[in-house]
Length: 470
Image (tube, rainbow, N blue to C red; front, side, top):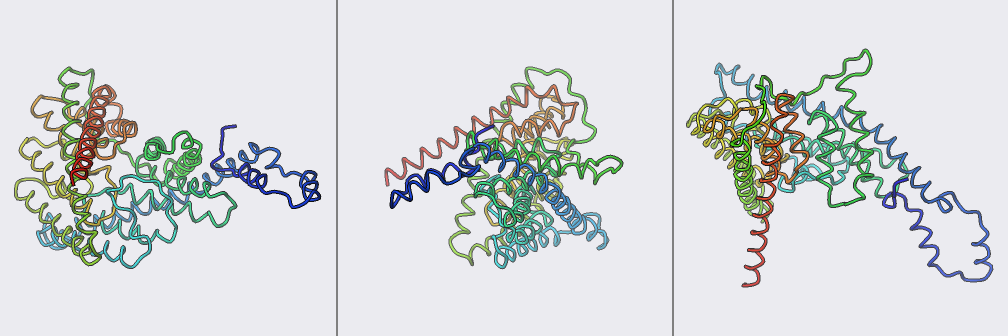
């Protein structure tokens, strides 16, 4: 049996009782002859029972968490289509007019402000905190959902993974009052809900598992047993998408970009360019986070300023999209997370247009990171990485399949610090036609990780030196 001392507390209870002195010889005798419980005689067995209980509860949590994720993503998609496609068509135009491009992100900022001001939980954690696995009380779920809808459907540059992780965690926490578990067991159930919810977005339990595994690496060896109930939850929850028996399920969200050409073999230039893409993606993402942190600090000075900067951030994102459109880009290249716009950037035929897209997307992303919107960092980073790699396609005649594999992997690593989940996710995006791009993607990821580590070390060293001088 694997050690589960963080979940079972029988040994701690025995140690505590052993430290209490007996008040008389009779008490000592009574304690020595009283019947021992199963937990005291067999602590490993007791921990095993608790662990199997967590596995079973994870399976139970998986289905409602997956259904919640499916409903949430469907609602966001429906509202996005309503606001950005149906509404302009109703107005008699083919694309969103300038007042909608300005007004919708502004309206989204107001929705987020209302969620953070009037609902518990502050709308979830800041996207600057990255991908986290902190348990989310179920009472926070309405505020998190509303803030995420105001962000995602109204055009802010953030992804849906962070709200999904939090909402899934809230599903797990609903079960907590009804079961007897130690404190660490509550965290395990919350993580199980997160597993199931985020697997609905990333196309299955594998990427979700690696993503949350890398997010919790600080826990060390205790992490794996704590995550296994979550893996069970993700697997059981994913059944509602793939179907069971004669039931076809709700349908799997395919992450693969369609109609990608086969990438067969590789070239020296492709391997070298992958390193360049990783370095450039890290430099850009480092500056994006730095700018986002600056905006966040300015917004944190007082509550009135925080809401003012949030509203100003919504307007600024709309202005950036309008300027980019005037320069030849599409507003979808600047707005939103970039999840559905990857095929468009791969099809771009001008280096200048790609530079415009990267610049305006990065600025809009930095604003959304810090001004108070709520969402995740994965897809904007992937989009920027793919756009950088697409320049290599135009200048060095590389395959767009190579650009997708390398750009997605390097961008995700630069934006999140994750390595293995970035590589796996990039392969899901390319599908089987991109398997030969794995060596280049690995080099891009390593270059991105090392560059980010070097930049972070330089920043921290510089800050320490400045404080010492002061």
